[in-house]
Length: 53
Image (cartoon, rainbow, N blue to C red; front, side, top):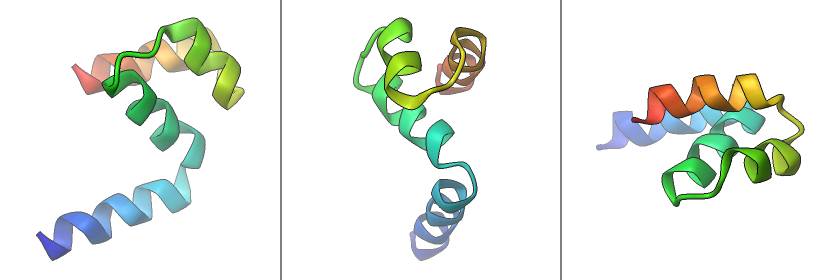
């Protein structure tokens, strides 16, 4: 468990926009809203969504 938390922390520090987008997608936020909220492109958010599913 500790290793997983450490890994998640590193991911957030290295890619904060992507980490936030991933969490927003996990709670069901729409792609356009995630893109607007994070500053990522729609294509980037769609790539992240594929990883989430």
